[in-house]
Amino acid sequence: MLSIVFPPFFVESIAADPVTGTAQWGYALAAAALSLVMLAPVAGVIADTSRRRKSWIGGCLGLAAAALVALWPVTAGTPSSFVVLGLCIVAYVAIELTRVFTDSLISDVAGPAEIGALSGLGVGIGFAATLAYLGAISWSSSALAQGLEPGVIERVATAATGPWLMLLALPFFAFFAAPAASRASGRLDPAGSSLRKRIVAAIELLRQDRQLARFLLARMAYWDGTMALFAFLTILASTTLD
Image 1 (cartoon, rainbow, N blue to C red):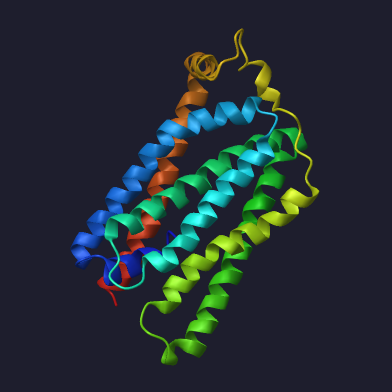
Image 2: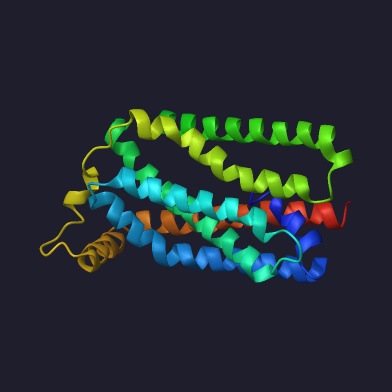
């Protein structure tokens, strides 16, 4: 929703004009990416050493869902672009931080030969849920669009993503027993075990393993670039190609 449906709606219906809206959306993506550069390492260390990873996942998901739901009243009337973008940034960052904590669980529940299959299955189920949600939006917009004001479908669809996200997370909270701490905790828990010392230990690991550091840097550039490409392609398709 934040990559495909909402950006064109923001540019066309909330921003002062499409050019300004496109620039503002780009700045919002940059702010979200910068926030992740600063917060993701901290979240990673917490994920590798915390005994309450399910609580962290629930907190991040709850924050993302609340920001998405809040977009419904905020986008009504004459909304403030900065408030709308702020909520989008919060939702985007919270979802990505959730991914840090869920990724930290994979090596605890699957052996090396199973990690790829388990990760791929999770991604596939996520995309299936997305396609089902987009299909429901497409059907409802075709059936109801004649009696609704412009933009209502986009607002409802974006806000409802929050409850949809929490609904699909229920099986995880109901049935999954998270291990106490990740297997990486032994290497990231030096004497004193303060958060600062753990982060320093993680950075030292990257200094020692340059191949891993290059991989993580490339992955960060690839993922952020892909998300930006998706967002601007939908804006281009909507504003330029109608």
